[in-house]
Image (cartoon, rainbow, N blue to C red; front, top):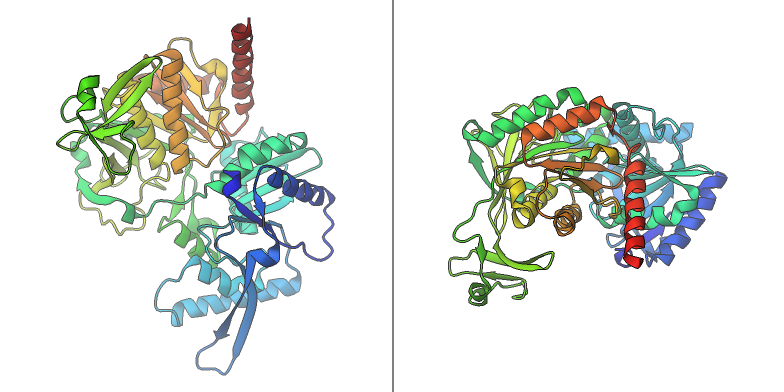
Length: 533
């Protein structure tokens, strides 16, 4: 990951004197270099850009000259900047100009890049970017003691975290004190690290987040169709699942963009980057349907040898039969099997919906994975409606379902419920009766990204290779962000989650993550000792 990144550091404001942040900034640059990240000097990472601001029907015209960060730069590191009274006046003027232009001059919605360039001259906390979808902003600031307090309930952390991201106008905020580091992004991570572990912080948490920006898939990536949720048993089960989880408080409602972002320019930027979504929620519920096969689900080796290659793929790994069904070579422990890639279908809550009070007719989408991604909306729903968007986590959903079909078919043969929440259980919550946990040491890529889907897929594969394919429940950990819990039976999953809440063995936030990591580290130490003996 690191060797593919280019990061620049914006020059410090005059008179900046936050010693802990200055020391961390120097160490961060060294750590990034040592991990293979290319550090690009500010002058090379940016280019001159100028544009005219003119009020129609008046002679007033102003040419604004600034520097924009080039699109090939992965991230820009800056410190939080606090506007003076003069700066606040400039911000007010810029916002009024933007509102005027939005209403009377521009004939269509403009990109986030154009908006930031238009108002960036007035706001020090806006770093003009040539491509905001490719370049992330990392802001260094003082550690927020309230936000990182492990005793503060997670729902109370949501408005604090969101306000911090909006105030600093950044994708990633690093909090710094003399003893601790914290990292915050739109996943609302509340992870903290001892200052002595800055090398682990950089390599396992910061670099993966820079490498994989959080971006929703646009509808253009799907073949869009419709289905009747009233005829889907799994859509009905999903609605029931959400209602049953209401009392656990594992799925907080999140926020509406218009409610937390007051300035029109800022709302328009977030709206553009969120691809029409009007809100953000934390967690998801989904239900995988049984996989769909056409023909034999598994072949003998001689049958595999008679299959044709698939363009763009290695014939040692993937082949297809005469009707185009694809087969993949898998290895489970020491057994080689040639399995059909089934059609995968998952019903899931739409992005921004109330997961614990889903409307069967409007809130449940159906996502398919064949040789392409498919999206089915409830009958009668307009695909151009702003609130009808698939979850950010769709890669994770289909990856888990596909892995279960290939490696643990008992998990999914009757359908498989899935829940993701931004917290963790204690390791002691997992029972000895075929309940397992994996992923604690994965790089902390943001949940919902393609890479996160890969790690979840490999998690199922690793569990089967380690414990066999009889899995009653599995926890797939996404460090810094939460956990995906899956099971073969809905009632069993609900009972286990409810008992974990009642026994204080599951909660939102990062407090229980340390127990998971410690338990896994102890298991690894014991296993290594046995192997050596």
